Length: 310
Ligand code: FO1
Image (cartoon, rainbow, N blue to C red):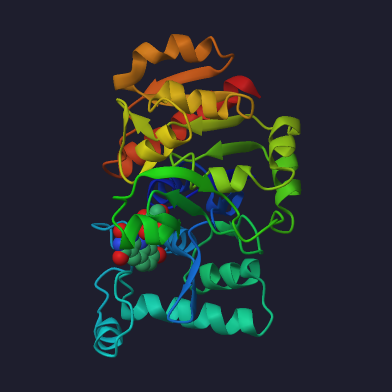
């Protein structure tokens, strides 16, 4: 089993590469739920839906989230009625949240809901939330403490970050079977996602560090930072706020005692030596996932690097 620790948009694209180089039934995506929140009384799981809809080829590729050609009739009326409209939810997207909320109320776990949805949408990759417990990510700023989505979307990431609070709802347990999945994996991959608020919440679960260190599987990460910048999203200010250098070397430091190897972009080839000095194996390739071929090449590079370690 190939286990991929995943956030949202970047991870979803990477997974599209992984399923080109390995049978989808042998791939399990463990997805961040730190972005999850309640809006309009609905349980919204942004990264789970991004991964699921991308792998179902239903995603709005221009945005990276939301459903292709979705309409906004309900959102328009919600706004007309005074509802919040800062988080754009299309009509088909809302069906996911309405159904998820109903099933959770009936006693289903988030794992069960997520598995039911990916099967309904024809996705052959197993998709597992990192936890079935609430584990919201909060950003502490000079203007107060906000849920990640309020900070990032509603407030346009303009606040000065003073800190990050993972699992702000209290102690979240790894999803059922997650530690076992890592222990028995053939390969563990960390997708090119935000190391602080997408991968960070997963790694902060009790037992995750130990599981990654103990597994016989090679653990290989892909740097989401290229040429000192993130491809998309707020990784740079968040890494700085967490005291890390915004570079592929900074990524290596964050993951150093949990991974065996790191794949970095060719523009960062000069960082291969200092990263190797940390005891990590390094592969250098084009990590910008412009299209299908680049996604497949990146996944193949990760797999090849893993095979040199196993
Ligand atoms: N990101 C935005 O920047 N603006 C939005 O209005 C927005 C809506 C949205 C709806 C459903 C969904 O699954 C994701 C959505 N996202 C939106 C992306 C979301 O902010 C992601 O959690 C982040 O991009 C981090 O992965």
